[in-house]
Image (cartoon, rainbow, N blue to C red; front, side, top):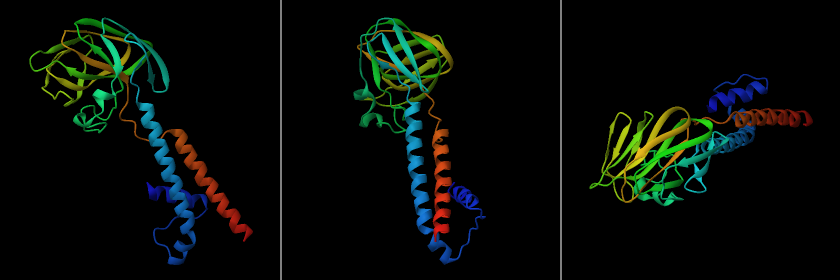
Length: 248
């Protein structure tokens, strides 16, 4: 990538780039290249942070029944029907040493869930979105216990993305078709497709929790706007250097 950017820089200057240079050439262009590298690194960091923040589309619940999701920059209003217990700030359950914090290899696969809907009785739940959303992910906390399993019967197929410990350990799960059974399970499920709503039934236990997101963890490239800024910066630096050369 660095070599490619150097080729771009020299193309803007009207000269081909050669791998070997005389020491004198390197010395005279050193300050300019260092400035170029600093700008590239700064833009790269900013674009990566922007891309990561755009990925995180977990529902921000204002009550156990209503919330808002940022789905790729689009605001989606969410309603929940059923009998939830309450909603809480889930950071206490998602982000700590036993889950691996926000590590990609942790319990929650680096997806950093936020709020949590807590449940303590069996119910039929339906989440309804006022705009279609794609690729739903479900964060689950303490589903079941070693002495009492909890069953989720979904209306849509899913895959298990991650599984691991939480504050109360980890004791596994099983899947049969669209049925999920947890015996102290923590982790992420993925529902592929486009959704206006999603429904599932649950069984009772002391308490367990969940949240949903429209989330694409594969996005790691800089945004087009950042790439455009990079190109403008390269052009600006090249023109500025030519102007200084003419003044001399």
